[in-house]
Length: 403
Image (cartoon, rainbow, N blue to C red; front, top):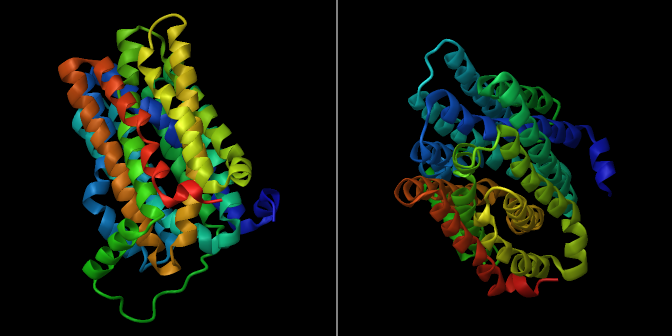
């Protein structure tokens, strides 16, 4: 069954379209939110780093209960509710800006609450896809979803730099809200496929513990989560302070920041588009660690970002690192979904999400701390250290020999 055939199926097509429009809006917001804090509220490196951290740190609080709860409920209505909630939250930002009442506290609250909405949506979606397409088509389905999200990275982030310059950051945030609203519309066309539970569910605490034990005790899942945590700790040490370095310290216009970030989208798109072929050629597990070993040294070039040609040397290294991200997002997410029973999918995805996105949040906090105390470049070099070693967990795991 080809990816073209998948898109002919109404249910998957609507899920795919919803994912595409929400991803485009989210990438516009990814660029616009820190620029809004910088341009409208004159935020410093610590405030921008904290804003980045709050978008994901909420996962540490609600992540595990969310997974157990998601395993008990129908996924499609939950995804629609998460989309609509995020749309309302994000629409409040331009409304407050245009009324003259925007504060950093408002931005912090929106970042934290939309992070909770994203947690519920993503865990539900990753638990729903195996049921929608079947486990034998997971690699093809994830390749389409990840590849399209990467394409939205490119177009959304590039467009965001232009839109912020032309219409201002509040208008860009309104587009972010509209993307989530349209996603909810498309998801109404996805079949439910689930019925309400007929018997009372077991105690929540026991379900949570079962999910954690499953992930940390599994020979395939444990190295996946370790390498993902190292990668996700390193990336925000780069990305959280890029607006400060590129726009404030180096004095480049906003479109340069958008273009730089869009290069990462191209890398993710290339990695997701070639993941199936590279995995078939090398073996999926071997592909993950070999590509990681080859690409992670590029992390040492990202902190060289400066004026002149060095910004594009850094951007090329960013492309190499995000190529690996795109490939891993297809192959490793498919591994996770294949080895997990249906009744544990929500808890597995939530446990993974807790660790992976918690690492992103901690990376954002480290970026804020290091940026304030030792400067932006010190944060970038710290990120390079984590990234350059993130291939190790896979290399010393059973995945290395998986063909």
